[in-house]
Image (cartoon, rainbow, N blue to C red):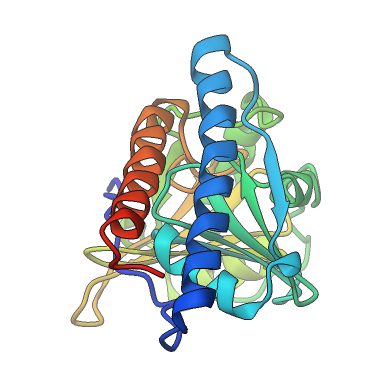
Length: 267
């Protein structure tokens, strides 16, 4: 099952600003959007890696509220190291709000560097213990199959192709099987929340390149509970083909702010 991306209205809306602060926030937001536009154009036209960082802590809370509301909220929220860091997608593909230790920055990249570094952690192989609980039926063959796929998969590079995926709900797993399987692969330090037509959660495991993906519909029913082999599931990072759309949104947001300033609706 592929996850469909849909944007949603920002939840970063703050209280109304006075006219002077609003104008200052609008002008600063336009300035940053111009910098972003240049970064996206360089990537799209020259093939350069998308890399742009801005420390929003220098702006002050009022300007940040205006900026974040203008950028909107996307669907992807990545949590690292038990919540010590988060990367939240904006409505502009390839632009993230990164929070590390309470310090915030905007990062333009297919995937923030701190997330990329986290992907290199974990064991290289699935280690199946010799001592196994009673009641197992299909977990060990399934783990061996996944281990074989891992051994043949290059997880050093992020790929946009459809990864190997096995739905545990469609396997003849006993409760003991599933408990044993999830204990063997363990839980890693990175989790992803995707919001759209369903609630999708993706968890890294203790094994590098192996993920657990769970999709739950709005009624609370589990639609998918699968193991995925990939450096990172392709629905998480922005894709290069998303960047022209991102550039269009950057220009659109800049234009509506400029138009509102000119007609007196802002500041």
